[in-house]
Image (cartoon, rainbow, N blue to C red; front, side, top):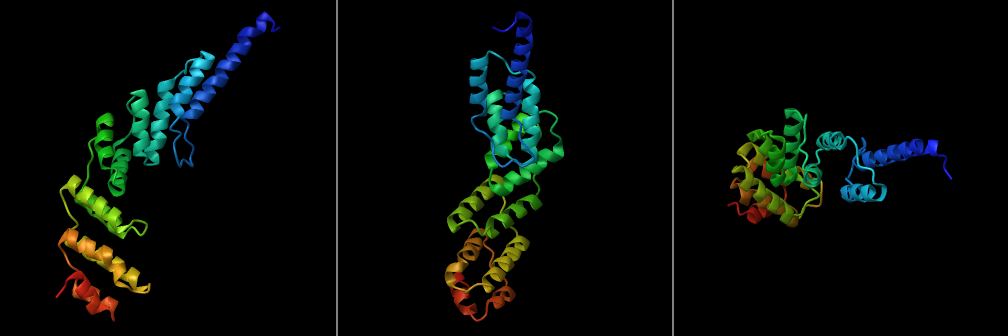
Length: 225
């Protein structure tokens, strides 16, 4: 039997342990790669089991927001807001704009508007940001043609702009130089063809010359007379 004088001490120790557990659910480390999507159900379950409510919960949530903005994690930011209805505070404009640019390049376009609403910070997306997003989209070696097409169309619909002449020629150069280092086949030119169809801009002759001796085959494949 626990002596009565020790009950308060033990209860305080339990409370502190529970508060530590609450904090860990939303305490994102420097090596943040993912978010525990069950964090809030775990918080709720722990509350039911112990009867101990989380203290300073608002501060814990704000700390989580700070980490998520630093790591450019828009989906997780909205996840935290959806479950807490607590808006991010003390997020400066530079951090927010960095997140918006990252969203643009990763095609998290709806998230830009939603995060703008909960932070009150309006996205400041420039033409340079848009062109950089197109460069990333068309030069991504990990994406298939269908994914690139989908992302490009979404980017165009969202911004109302297409890649300009400078961006397109830069992309052709990157894509052609990449193929020169490989065993060139017409299959490898699906992305340049997609780029031409999407932008309405063809490669300059000096870029096509990079691909000798397949120059004429490429011209025919791209529909260039």
